[in-house]
Amino acid sequence: MKKLVSRATAFFPLWALLACGWAYGRPAPWAAMKPLIIPLLGLVMFGMGLTLSGEDFRRVFQRKGVILLGMGAQFGFMPLLAFGLSLLLDLSPQLTAGMLLVGCVSGGTASNVITYLARGDTALSITLTFCSTLVAVFVTPALTWLYLHRTVPVATGEILASILQIVLIPVLAGMAINHLWGRFLRPLQSLFPLLSVAAIVVIIGIIIGLNQEMVAATTPAILLAVTLHNLFGMAAGYGIAKVFRYPPPICRTLAIEVGMQNSGLAVALSLKYFSTAAALPGALFSIWHNISGSLFAAWTNRRPGEEKSPDPP
Image (tube, rainbow, N blue to C red; front, side, top):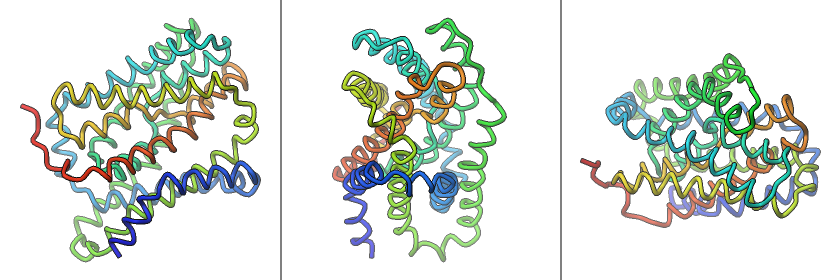
């Protein structure tokens, strides 16, 4: 069973691309499944919780430096990169606004699933997502004013309720069950990566179905901007962790957390405060960062022997 699951998850990028093609050709059935996004993410987070313990989070908070490092890269590098790419590729003011909003928001919840599949530090990923979400309430409006000279308020209650519903409650429930009956669930834990892959593939298809018209309107310049924003963000997250001599699982986690943004929030803010055109970068980012994340997870799973690295001094 374990070998079968491993082989199925190894083709994660292929399943993701097939879902993209199917949803682009027939968007209506996929778009109709929009209500499944939150339950699917919640189910995966619950499965991840079954593999975690309180000790995992205690260890994360013993290394506050890596949390500050990840958040600094996310809110420092990603907005600056978005601004630089927009200038370099001569994007319109509306597209530039959309790019900046993608760069200024917090990390996305899908990053937790990708971190789990990439054999990163899942507890650290969840902690970074939660902390960046809290900080984004104040930092995102400040950054949008700094770069765009326009105030974009962030709905604090809605974001925190979403994180609570999608991430914290399912993970805590899974951890509680793991604490009480973990020894009986060990044989099933090998199935969790396959469940996560299936959920992310379906979510990618739904996002394509919901944004098919925007995808069809994509120009080479904005596609290149979104792709480079994500890839350079992942490279920066990995590189800065490497410079500080963190072990590979933490390097992978920071790569994913810095490179994968809460693009759904960026789309919502773009539509509310700017225009439909400004929402295009966030919509494309939603699709692309899941594909690049799946490719990254598949790549890391082909690199054995990196799991047990010493912590930095």
